[in-house]
Image 1 (tube, rainbow, N blue to C red):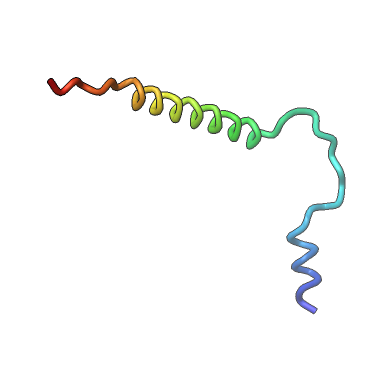
Image 2: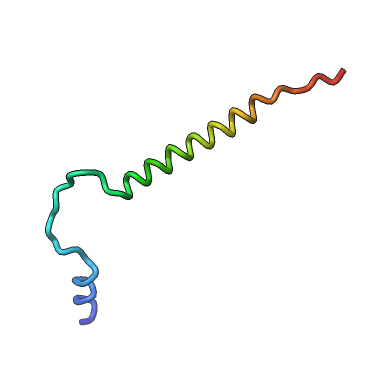
Length: 56
């Protein structure tokens, strides 16, 4: 069977390592989320701060 060696090679070693700190990917995801929220809020403020001009 070819599937058995491939499954064993593609998986992890089975050793559990305790998490001592956030992974780099966790920090990167948090930074991207904060930047996205900041960008969207800035865009919405600019959009809604534009006052309609009186047409007299």
